[in-house]
Image (cartoon, rainbow, N blue to C red):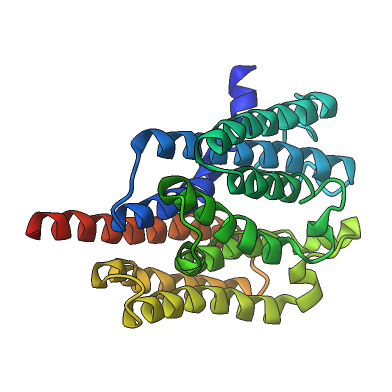
Length: 300
């Protein structure tokens, strides 16, 4: 049973929370402020929020009739009957409650903006497929761009520095585009199932060809933003490390062209590689900031 619950949490998706939280903290470290204890607390809260969102997503898709045995390949716990909807919903709310408890402690230590950002994230995570269910209204990828980009990087930065700044918002834009690409590739994968379920994702609103074009745009935008931030000296030159992933991006574009022909296998591959690409891009960006910090400190 423990293994079943662990899989229901979808731990492979936690990198989507790790990257913006670590990026915000790395940016603070680049400016000379970093507390490991506060970072671990922030990361734990972010992962708990992600876990709660995953569970409520599974619950919402099941209750809405969107998930079936055929479509719910990564979260089959409810459609297969191994877990009950009420238990999954309660587990999701418990994860949110744990995240809020951490947020309250961080608010006590660092200030009221922390809990405000956390509550916005909680509402956004719950309402992805439950309540307002904005995923079913074509807003999933758009909202996730903000919720798992700026809205996670900014409080992480603030917790470290206690400074109000647009800097972490700007720096998080490349990873925001890439986390949106993960959700968009998920919608691409499930277009036929979502159409049968009667919901409207962004991919269904746009159609297959335009959705593939948007997929290209999200990756190109991440690189263009990064280059712009370095050229404008918002980020140091070492932050350009994610450009090493350009060959991988070109390969993914080739996969997308195959997916555009309706290949289900290629669409499944798009989703997996999108998550991996987001994680690698984030790690390289964080590594560049961290390397600059250490090099700069050594030179001084």
